[in-house]
Image (cartoon, rainbow, N blue to C red):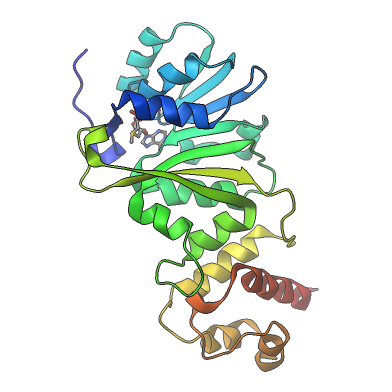
Length: 260
Ligand code: SAM
């Protein structure tokens, strides 16, 4: 069946065989590992996953036309789910998956944020391909212009390693931008907060006004904003990009203490 790739679903298929193999190898898949691939497309990456030791592979693809192709191509040992990844509930993630995904670029940050903020989802590893610009934000250092909400959410939960940049020629159709492969390994110990929702909301409030001094938001959050800012060692004339991940989590903890 000849198919026209759908731009609205971010369909840029990875066609470089060396890269496809390398991506799967990074997972170091063992025979008991459970694999989840998000957005398998025509199954280019899936083919290499199927050759791995895992006998437990689930793929989730939104495009019904592609699901028909996938069902033709992979007849055994693989669960093919025709669904929107954004609509999967926490219950779906009962297994500690190794997740692969050449993610649709328009929803990649949203998926990652959901995974980071969900209390009950545990992963073995995530191996994800992003638009380079988004990956740069995910791995950004504090005090840089790329430092963002997603930097905080992702680095709170995961150790993140940049694996490689990919040129548009590795894909068909070619995207306009470069891509970057990142590997996420869950941190053994994270800074505990009562509700990730509070981290979600507080980082949203601060980064919605990323050029403004943080004082305004401290006033919004805390009656005793001067004391709180001193106790977490934050200068009220700083901008959100100057506040480390640990300090953001301290702000959340202070906020949660005040709610008691
Ligand atoms: N993994 C394939 C590859 O590398 O060749 C395809 C990657 S392509 C960038 C993104 C894939 O995600 C497409 O197949 C697209 O249909 C699928 N997709 C887009 N939005 C989705 C969603 N909300 N849920 C599940 N799959 C989605």
